[in-house]
Image (cartoon, rainbow, N blue to C red; front, side):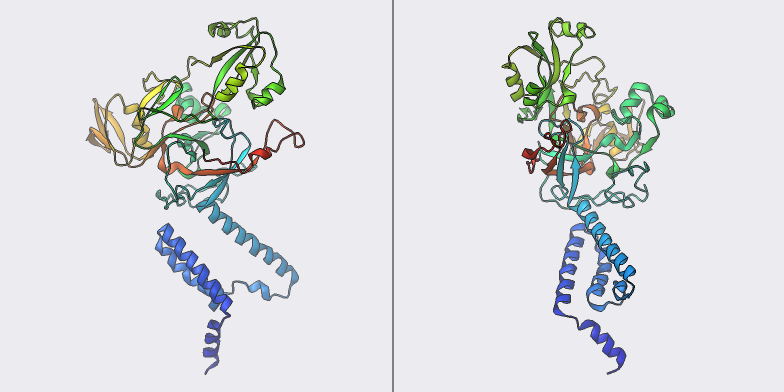
Length: 468
């Protein structure tokens, strides 16, 4: 037998351990490809075989070096590259971390809760913006530059998940109207700013609003809310009660509303408000001299202390029975508090809204002057059609149309902190291609109002179920 033949044969004479590793990782890779559904990736399978068996490519050339510096540096590089690849795939297809930044879901989830979010629950999205830096949503910290290249853009595709999105699930999603962002004023969103001040004013006043930037679907800000309406539902809000398909929504313990609280002159102490789990930023005592007209309108006494903060059903009852508290009045709608669709001519409010139909994929809807403002953004932006009205006639992609058939499912998201939540009532529907995943549990919780040695870590929230 020639030397070349012996060398070739020896490449396949590997310990059983190497063959087991090769078979194991090949099976994992094949199963992953079958899940993703892109069988072109099978062309990379020979590389796995080469890593463990044939070794034509010197993958670990540095291990043969006699230079200690090279051995040390390359061992770190090898470990870091492996960790980054592993983290990238886990983050993209299985789990990601999410920190609650605002109080919109209190008291179900609190500011400072860190959540483990499952992307496999509803099925992970195949990356839509493939040329993006892993683990950075859209902007590099400190550098303040975008972390992605807009092109190419891949079509939306979602892999099979372990479950489907259900009504009342808590969901992480990309902010739908976060496609265009005024970087110095991101809340309210760009479209609300344009409605209030005019598009030209927002685009030209860099000192006030900053640069106007575009973000693809999967690079938009992550939000977390409760899905109160799924595709195909009819939703309505009457006096703060969410009604879906004619039935009142389940009353979750964490749902809260803003109230004005009058006392007989007694001052509510920080200890009492701590007991009610009201955060420092929510503790507002009104200046009666400056707000006298408003206090009188609410039927309260301008000569006695008045407070304003959110309360759940439980804390409302506790406060009712607190010494010195004489009256609680729910926060009314204030003039100028506009809701979706902005400028649409609806007389809906934050507390009395709809009825509104939440579109379902394949459903066909009659186009009318009454519903145009509600579904215009879906047809034009989310589903990429040219939409015009000429002499009272609708035109979609330059063709006359009287109906429209939806291409995606849509959802209606609301915060449990109902009077302190910028949600679907203000910016509309969440398309299915914006869904990121489902929070599973709280793995860390930090109280921003406390010091490290004074209760900052909320131990009682560790591993709290975040699905309800």
